[in-house]
Every structure is written in structure tokens, then in C-alpha cells.
Image (cartoon, rainbow, N blue to C red; front, side, top):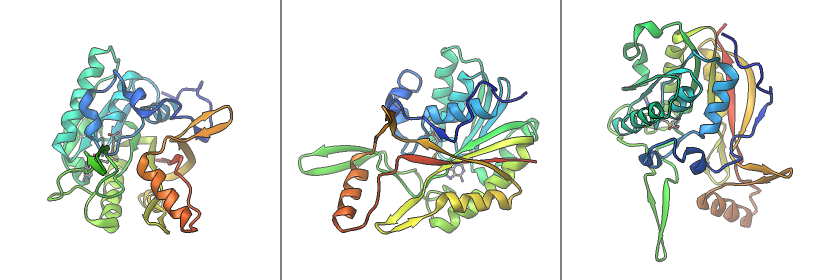
Length: 282
Ligand SMILES: C[S@@+](CC[C@H](N)C(=O)[O-])C[C@H]1O[C@@H](n2cnc3c(N)ncnc32)[C@H](O)[C@@H]1O
């Protein structure tokens, strides 16, 4: 099977023309909002359309609420997803069930477990059969989550990735995240069929106001170190484009952080895209 030849080959993906909640409306169960760091459905769909064909097998070793699986199913692909947090795999399974009621052509299997051990978790029949690994790592122990204003106080909900007692790579710092991701990618390589694609979405992470960590660069080095060949580097928009102008969809925390930094003379910008690293197994 070859990828969809009708897809335009562009390096900027217009993946946020609709707000995220509208992309998910009716297609994802309400509890999906409790996952702190979901991939945009249109980003997942774009990658699946661009790099696989109907009937292909798509794999996400850190599947969270199951975005990769649901979008694969609606596009007639089959999918396997793993996440270490049972609370997230329960949501992913509910999203897969919902897709089945909506006449999605594909099927999906959700597995709870530590993806650093993924070869012990996935069915042996999947080894060498995966056409696309599509994934995004956590960038730290949480995100802004859901924000509520109570009087003068700002309260965050659903902003943490879960249990810090076991192997969740969201905890334990950069070294552990990068080492764990290397182990996951190395095992994922073995699931890929020859010529299969890996798509990693990520963005630089601002640790302190003037300290930007080049996570995409780090992940690219890791991917190359496990034998993957870089073939493309794209930008998936986190903002809309209207009449040639970028319309940002940044959250309140992003806006406040940028305003404060600028007031202090640090020329930071709002993040308007995710880096998309595209690599291939030879
Ligand atoms: C950025 S989120 C992925 C979100 C997902 N793409 C979605 O759309 O919902 C990263 C996920 O990695 C999971 N994770 C962290 N460490 C893991 C590990 N060792 N094995 C499997 N999953 C892990 C977290 O629980 C989290 O759900």
C-alpha cells in the first residue's frame, strides 16, 4: 500500500483551522478533556493520511486519550496504542468504542503498560507490520490543564499526567524522559515494516523565561541513533490562518508568560506550531 497520493506535500500543516474542542466534538467522549496533553485530531489525521493507506497498521506507544487510534479508525486504518496510565487507557478505550458506533472502518487495540517494555505488550503478529508510528512524548509533569477563575484565584484542573510512582516519563526530569523515549523508539523500530514511517510531534520547551530547551533537536538525535532516517521536518499549526494572518489560539498562561517576558525586555513569541519530525525505517 502507498500513502494517499492526493495529499498535497506541504511542510506547513493547517491543523488548527478549527479550535481543538470543535475538532473533538461528537467524536471523543467528554472525559477526554481530563487528559492534560492531547494531540490535535487534525494533526493525527493529516499524518495518517500522508504516510499510510487504508488497511495499514498505525502504532502509538504513548497514546494518551487515544487520538491516534480514533483518527486511524475513521480513516480505515487499524491501530494499536499503549499508555502507562490506566485512567488514560480507559478514556482511549471509550473513544475507540465511540468510533465503532460511528461506522469507523478501522479497528483499534488499547493496551495499558510501560512502553519501554512494548515488545512484551504488543501482539507478536504486529512485529514488522506497522506502517506508521505516530506519537508525542510528555514535556514535563503536566500542562496548564483546565483553568477556572474562582474570585481572584486561578485554579488548574486535570493538569498532571498522573501517577509519579511508576514509569511515567512525565516525571523524573529530562534525562529520564530522553532515555525512556530512546528505549521506546528503539523497540518501535522493530514493529515497523521496511519503509515504515515514524512521526514525532513536539515543541521546544521553555523551562525558565530565558531558557528554551530544544526538545525537537534532542528527539531527532535519539531517532537517528536508533537507526531511523530523517526524511522531512514539518510544522503543524497550533493557530489558525485567516486571510493570510495567523490567529493564535494560545491559552491564558501562554499569553501572560509572553506579556511578562516582553515587559522585562525578553523578546519571546507565542508558540504557534508543533515541530513534526518525519523519519523512516530503511
Ligand atoms: C503527550 S501525551 C500523549 C497524548 C496523546 N497523543 C493524545 O492525543 O491523547 C504523553 C503520554 O505518554 C504517557 N506515558 C508516559 N510515560 C509512559 C510510558 N513509560 N509508557 C507508556 N506511556 C507513557 C503519558 O501517560 C501520556 O498520556
